[in-house]
Length: 229
Image (spheres, rainbow, N blue to C red):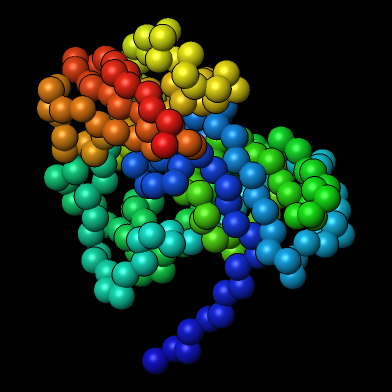
């Protein structure tokens, strides 16, 4: 049996998602969603980020820390296929894999020299849970990483999927102005499991310090409550 390969956690993600429900299913779907990468003390060396500002996007290699399993299945049920059709695990981005490793492309907004945390990275469009361990960060290279003619397999028919969002002004005003666009973008991606379609059901989603409640019927998501936690 092959010996385990050691992995060092170099940083932690700070995002608006304290729980998995509501996290975009892929990176880049909600570009206005802001997150911060905070390095572990051993890696808070500004020299390690020298030259990073010249790139517009980054690759993050991270752990599905809430989906680690001892066993694995060769097939999974992708949510965009309704949660009932099985596909090969290596043909999906499911978190339930032999190694619970995620890969995300995010937009680099800025690098900040924080007085106590050292260099921190501000990014947009991430799909990571708050507290997610990050194993590595690499620059996105347009000349080799971009493939405009690439095929999307069974996911191709789901590009551009979104719900219309009805967010009553009285409830929207309870959301910090800087977070409103991102929250609406997350809701438009339909946070519900694909196998649930009960128009009477009220769903609750944690977003930062808020608990957002909503219903969905006939392609329209209606926010019915916003509460501070």
